[in-house]
Structures are given as structure tokens and as C-alpha cells.
Length: 95
Image 1: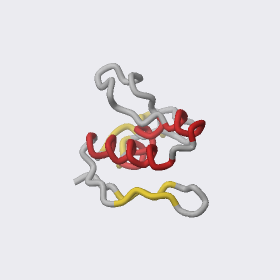
Image 2 (image 1 turned 45 degrees about the horizontal axis):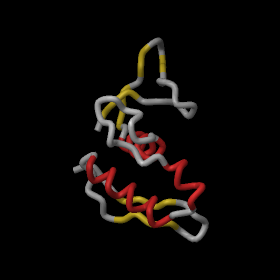
Image 3 (image 1 turned 45 degrees about the vertical axis):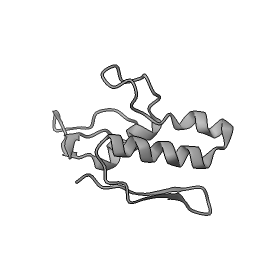
């Protein structure tokens, strides 16, 4: 999927006085994990809200919510798990 690209600070990336457009699949995945439900007016049920899971330490709930949100966004969720260090590993391409 192509969209406007953001830089590492989350600001729109500008090169040569133009907005940069590129493949944004990973950007969309990250945005869904960070975004709290209700933050997107057009899609109030979209978003995982990962910050709330940090306090509860509910890893299974976090992975389940990521899977639900990715599926709702049209991704083909093949694998979502954590490695030994707590890093989330995702295999969920857009068709």
C-alpha cells in the first residue's frame, strides 16, 4: 500500500519541498499498535492502544488485540508472537 511517509519522529517526510509517497505497510502496522481506540474519528474502534497493556502485563491480550486489529484492517495475519526478549514478531501482509 502506498501513502504519505513519516520520518522517525512521526512527522511527514519532506524531500526537495515535496511530501514523500512510498510503501507504508510497516508504518500502518506501527500506527495501529500505538493508536488508542477512539483516536480516529472515522474509525472509533480502530487501534490497539499498546500503552494500556504495559501496565497490565497482559501479553496474550496484546497479541490477540493486534491480531484482531490487523485482520480488521485487511491484513492476512499468519503469525503474531513474542520472542524471549519481549519483541513482537509479526507476519501479516496486506493481500
